[in-house]
Image 1: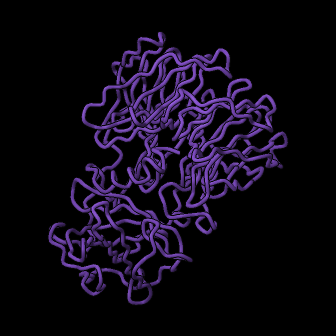
Image 2 (image 1 turned 60 degrees about the vertical axis):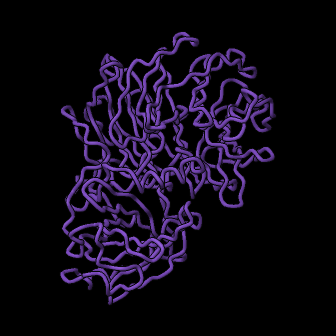
Image 3 (image 1 turned 60 degrees about the horizontal axis):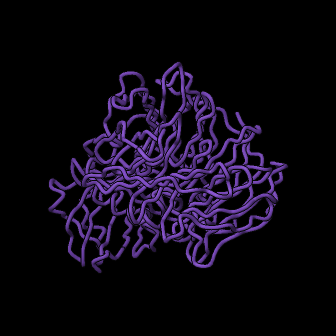
Length: 523
């Protein structure tokens, strides 16, 4: 999936709790869908806005409230009538801000199984008296931490602002403000985008579906484990996109954390967290046959990318390396090289990559967006890097537009948004445009077809942009896939549209973490 839910599900959460440079983005904030053209300035993923909640403490390190008594919060000046009138339902994503430099993101839900960060609430008060919930988690150091949230205002439908306090082993240790949005009620202002038509929707019964590849009239969907459900590969016949037919599911004993998938000819390549790149023979597309795992050792490969006769495999661990294979014989990949990008002290690793004109554009998470010369597989110098404070570079797509080499890059974390970069000169990468959605959401994957950019934007669903003028991407189509009431929906950041392919047959194939395989008509 991304910074993988296993590798980075906890990693991203830890990152969110400790990263500086994040903020609550309390109103006023840029309108959803904001485009920043031409004179774009890198302000990182968050722009700090000083909150004006009347319940805020003068010092975040000296909280007045505790985690067990709602009356301990100083709520004079709050609109408790509006807060108390909130419907006790729905999935919320929130930014929690505790000083001018630091914030984190977390989700909670208030309906059938009330929870905070996926764990059952330990206390909930909601009604005329106001809004007060408490969630609990245990740290790796075996300390019990509770987060108590008290609502203060409802600035507009779908929004809730207020104050929180964190208590460690019962002792309040810091406080701050929060801004939460109910994901299915908080609506952005019109962007001019037309609604995409849903052609079909098919559940994926294997784990959490995260990536898809379409070839030979079949859709190959890979999944991560979900609780006790194993992950693996699900195959669907999509010769009639309006009526996909489930064909088979495949996994290996103790090896089914499969996050990425690609195909070339009769070969299907799967990114496995346990055994590297798994090769299947799909000569008969309905009956994948196991061939081998490469390079033949325990290796976490998170994503794969094929360009011509090259297969690239991005491996977060144990070595944070990228592997290059010769796939002129698709079923018999030959390892050409394994290379590393200098990381400094940031511990970044290759998450995803896009190959274009003898260059590999690597989303190297905390290290940033890195351009590598791969014309010679044995010599892979770094040509340039685009990095900023708090970055978690995650996915990208590159093409030539108006004679320039243009990259579209997105991170994966709260507030991550679409950046447009001129990478014609990799040693001098220029930010030329940005598109921002709600700061409580994140991008996942993207596909560039000519001058159309298709983005799987988690809670924001599928967004399609005309990028003929890359400095000013124009949103032309959208499909809102997230459903808070879906029985497989959670309050995680990782919800909604995650994987996307546009094979050129008139359809857009999407995997949604709750709904499974969605087929949309191309706009």
